[in-house]
Length: 251
Image (tube, rainbow, N blue to C red; front, side, top):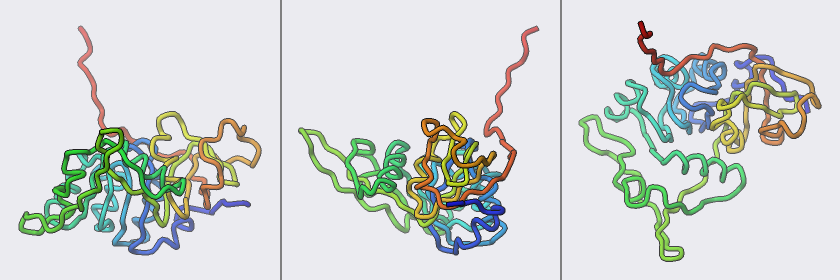
């Protein structure tokens, strides 16, 4: 039952090139930076990533993107990364855009064994009608469109069919974890971490503080250990602010 690993490099050592990954975080909040850095050092390529966004140009998943290690990303927001935009428009990166709530539910459904679900989100937009560019050609034309999605009527209203997401691995960050894999997140840093933890076939959690089984009250557990296969204590980690806004002090 002891799921602890010695360090991030050991925890991600069997992630191969071509693997699919669900990666927790929102912006730079709650991202598994130590595990991401481990993947960067390992040099694996052709990764298919599912995450709310792709970090920024020099932090988080942006590091893997800059190193050419990501082939495809499924995300709901991509606006903070110039290299992301460059690779997408140059035909170097496949991008599946999905509404944020749909992305969350697709991950949750994958973790619960639900293959698909209907939602009104995206109806009548390129998300559903098959006109969203999945990949561009180097000359700027659209090489591949995302496929059109099934539409069905319930109670005289149309809904879009969205498929569940499961991935080979999931990388998440938690404030607290025990050796059995039970996790606790710090406030908003929980964001997509719990959903990604559910969706990964092998979930690797980096934790700031590791405690013994039984030290976390059952009612405080955000993700039970049944969803987590590996736990890596990383101690205090650098937490960057994605956008810093200040105002001039009143005189």
